[in-house]
Length: 344
Image (cartoon, rainbow, N blue to C red; front, side, top):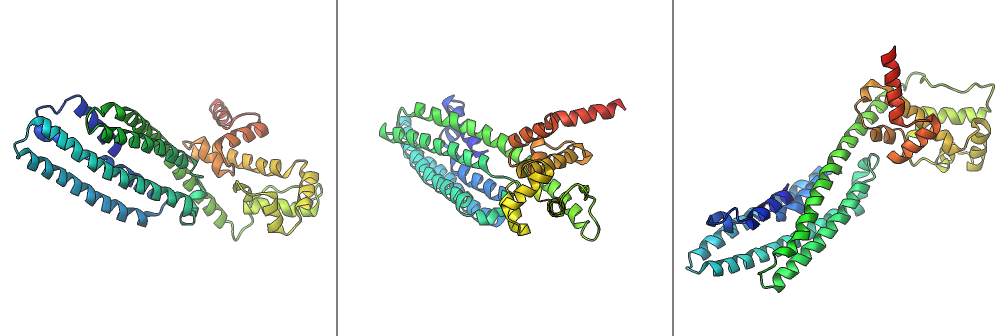
């Protein structure tokens, strides 16, 4: 929002929309000062660490108000000095350039601190990491770093030209910030929706699991006459504990949980299930995904949310494995079921 306001203000000034309106022509609100603090607030809220966002944002808003008041006071005071319009233009550009330099230093500091929180304080938001690997936020940081480089470029030219003839150096910055707005808006809405859906699915699974504490869970078990007793124990444990829902669960994890050697586990699963441990687990994940896809409660949920909560570590992996086991994509499977229902 602040970047948008800043870009709109710059566009209006370039188009001389405020020409001959002294207060609007010279009073330029430093919206760029709030861009990094607001992103920090968004990041902290997304990571669900609310108590860390309010103080910093509050301080920056106070400084922002002080900067606005100082600029108004400066312009009004200097305009009463009787100087020419050219002199006022020069002094005002010089003043706002210093103000922008202060804004850049504050912004890059908040940006660096935000990255420090994301990279070095993962213990504070372990819960969110079970829903989102935050790759899209890391990519956003990379794009934003490019914006800061362009901002430095624009400021250097501005100061080197003694605050005249610097306008074109800001064009790359304006374009890049506009792209950032669209990217963050799209990604933010997309992942907030997925996060909400995944939380709802997981809450339902937790309720389902807790409701089965004192009763036998309805799990389809293999025929005891067809499989080895050890495999039956392995299969029951995996299904009852729903460990297939954990995307990073490996054969070594299962070996540790059951206190059985990994080579013995692998051989037992291969011999009885006629497939590798990975295919064996993925088949359970696909079956779980099918339940979600056919459940009316999740009818409007994204395929990504369903795949990720079924134990897959990415949407692409979900599509590939689902098609391998079912012969069709998740969406085709869902649509095929809907079609059959409508034909009845």
